[in-house]
Structures are given as C-alpha cells and as structure tokens.
Image 1 (cartoon, helix red, strand yellow):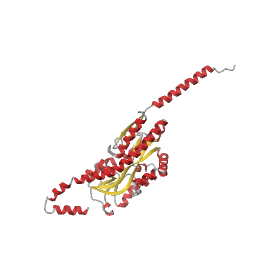
Image 2: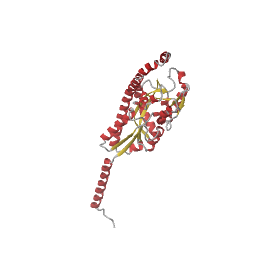
Image 3: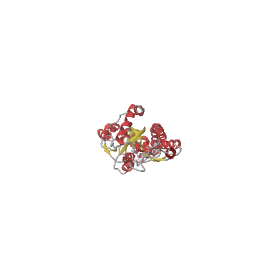
Image 4: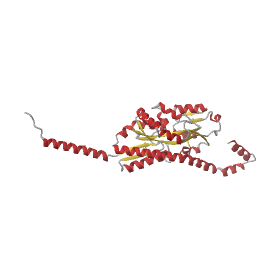
Length: 322
C-alpha cells in the first residue's frame, strides 16, 4: 500500500525546523566572545595604549558582545612564548615585534636587518601596499595567525651602562640584548657586539645585575621600562624601525559572526593608526624627557666641581669627550 504524505504534518515539521534555525541564529547573534590580548610593553607604552583603543572600540561597536581583556607588560607569558599562545588560541590576540615570527616563518628574518627602512613613513607606505598584503597572506598560511594591521614600536637605539657609542669601534665587546631573530643577531655580531638572548621581560634585571651591558629599544621603551635607572648611555643609532603586527588567532576570528569580524577588522585598523601616531609622538617626547632628566643633574655637576682642585677640570674634559 502506497503511503500518502501528510502535508499538515510536513508543514508542521518544516515550521518547527525554521523556528529552531532562527532561534539558533538569534542565540549566535547574542553570544558574547572574550578576546584576551597579550601586550609586551608596560601599560604606558604606545603599543599598550593602542590595545586599549581596540578594546574601547570593539566593545562599544559590538554592544558588549565582544569583551576585550588587555594584559600589558607580558603579564601572562614571556615575549618568546606569546606568539605560541596566540597560535594555540590560549591568547586570542597580541601585538609583537615582527621578529617573533621567524621561528615559524624564517623569511620574516629580513626585518632584523639594520638600516632597512629609510624612515618609519617609508615603512608604512610599504606595509600599507602590496607588500603588506603579501605578508598577511603568507603569515596566515605559515602560522594560522591573521594580521589585522601593522603598528610599530618605534625606531631603535642602543643603550648601555659601559660607554657612549661614537664610532664602530665603540660597539666592540658590548653585551647587548638583541631581539631573537637570527639575522638581527648576526647583524649585531657584525658590529662587534656580543648578543644576548635574555627575554625582554628580564632585561632590566639582567643589566642591573651585570649579566648584560644594555639593549636596543626605541626611546619610548627606555622611558617606559626605566632603563635609564640602570644604564647611563643612550646612543641614537636609529638602526631599526620595529614593526608590530597586530595578531589574532585565525580559528577564533573565523568562528566569529560576520558582523563581529567586521568590527574586529575596523578596531584593528584603528589600533594600527593609534599605535603609529603615539609611537611617532613618543619617540619625540621620550627624547625630550631624557633631556629633562639630564637637566636635573646640572646643580649636582656644579656641586661636584667643588670637590677638589682637579674635579672641575676633569668634569669639563669628560663632557668635551662626549
């Protein structure tokens, strides 16, 4: 006997399925997502401030469906471990120096070359064009990590506790913490430096205890991390413009609803812009802050000149040698 379909039953089933499907869409639309952002620098650094701008915009535009937690100063993991955690999804986002990609994608080592960029602005032009798009595509393929934009840490200078750097010969024998990029390490070896692989989070203590003599960071970091307390000399070598890709775990990103992906993209672009602006301003203001610090020492210099008949003469000789 041939069974006739019960149209009323079928319509009821289809209607129920549609209700369930629409209900699931509604639940997905209202679901909230937590984005944990690990940042390497102190909260006062331009990079960390830009992450807070990402948080503000993402939470506001998503009406709270995106909850962004920012952890500055490598609170959760060392810099060396941060990229690994973004890849695994333990952290959803981070802003790290591009050099930390070299363990997963060796081609990124090129950014350890010294004097590669004419200026930060020339770097921006390159990264905002075809080169930047190609890097984003290749990094995603090699690491499973998506790049939302390219911020920056600033222009690096060498600082140390031993001597000022005036000539190539002054580099010889200095124990300098260098970012963990084989090309950067070889570049400093070519200068005569003894590179160290101390993690950036341990750099201050390592200088203080005499394990290393100094490091290579932008002026903003000298101020934010208070390296001036443990190192007397900063030399404006301007040897590297350090790019900070804004990373997000791709599995997390693709799991977001399309409207939240759009908000994340827009907030990433905003984070990039804020980071660049503050880094440029920070390099200038940090230079001014260092000048203010030096100015506080003038009365002490005058006091020291009165220590004895030779003191004043020797101070002038030392100042002239700078």
